[in-house]
Length: 165
Image 1 (cartoon, rainbow, N blue to C red):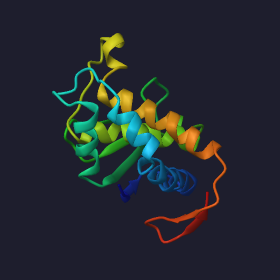
Image 2 (cartoon, rainbow, N blue to C red):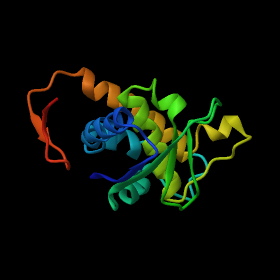
Image 3 (cartoon, rainbow, N blue to C red):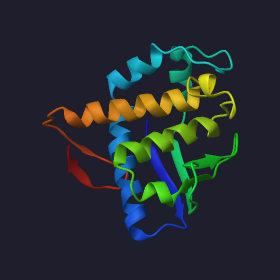
């Protein structure tokens, strides 16, 4: 899977760099067999009939295209995307303190909304087992695991930079 940044709006340069770094690092996680196996083995609530394996096929059929705009609000809202929409919003109140794994967790959560998956806002018990929350949390955890392991190989990302991870 490829992570492509289409647009970053209403963000300062430091915020844009954090998002780019998160996406560069996150792309390696999305292509890691251990992340794929975690998705395959999952059973989601509010899943539109998808199994973990069929959901992974859907995920891998598209690039993760980021069209992101910042907003600032002291609230519990990290961000939002309209269902089946293309524009994702991130609250810079959170972005400013988030680490890369938290930023990419939010991006994958919102990406699931772009793919048409919702969660019920008021039913907390099922909300956190919905596809957007489950995939976001699994990605966050696998991101931390991936980057906590020593690695020798380098990777080239879609921005043309080479990093040693």
